[in-house]
Image (cartoon, rainbow, N blue to C red; front, side, top):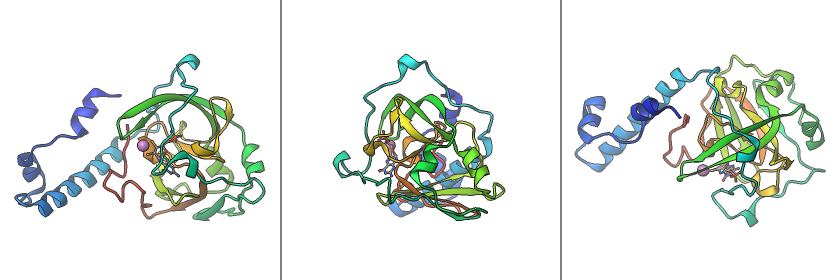
Length: 234
Ligand SMILES: Nc1nc2c(c(=O)[nH]1)N[C@H]1C(S)=C(S)[C@@H](COP(=O)(O)O)O[C@H]1N2
Ligand SMILES: [Mo]
């Protein structure tokens, strides 16, 4: 992680600085909330502007990858949706030329690469894991996605939803992962696949993906709707 960037865009800011930045009267709770929302949107714009497709997240050695990876979602692992190979279809929508739905069998036949990277959760834990799958940019190419559009959005079987900007979708380390620790992705980790984005916080990595869509409208995010930054790069 880049320390200087952290300092610039990191969490703390005095109320005085906030007043200067936003020109708002921040003497009451509502104004503070509005001022913080403004700063948050400004943060998203600055982060998007400095994000480079050539800036790679750090990778690690095979023996640094944790096998018993930590589970996280807004509910317990026993309630994870179990998607059935026979009936599952990946739905494609929006600015995509070939919207034919994909079976798990077809998804599993996509050429895979492996990645050993750190997953960072906003709740204060991080873990190095090994994931394998298809680069999202290859898949977007194969389905004829309009990569001049601004965003790619995801919907999930558990009601979760996320979205990323096109540069992040086309980033070489952004993968549709079908394996964790060399095993088929277990149910609770997002079977049949999870979007693994090592340049983003954990919550921007949707599991149990059922729909991928391409759009010019910024997709909503489950945790962004609950107050976290939309861009959330690391
Ligand atoms: N569908 C779905 N995806 C999700 C979540 C979720 O609740 N539902 N939680 C997110 C959060 S906050 C984290 S930290 C990671 C956890 O992924 P893991 O269980 O593979 O460690 O999944 C992310 N993707
Ligand atoms: Mo998270």
